[in-house]
Image (cartoon, rainbow, N blue to C red; front, side):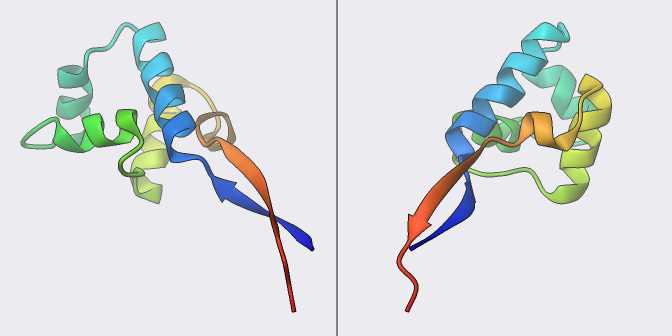
Length: 82
């Protein structure tokens, strides 16, 4: 058995939402920063249905003045190898 990291998309979304609220931003504010036509992508991030692309993750980290590691929630999973 080996341990491998796996992104927890729901916990990552909760981190994004918590940081958004702490920054005093609305979802619409974030939509404008990213230049999205609709807020759907941001809602998907917040609900854990999708992950931001790496370039959007860099923007989130700068926007919230955190590292990407502080945004992304990682769980270790045990995998049988061989």
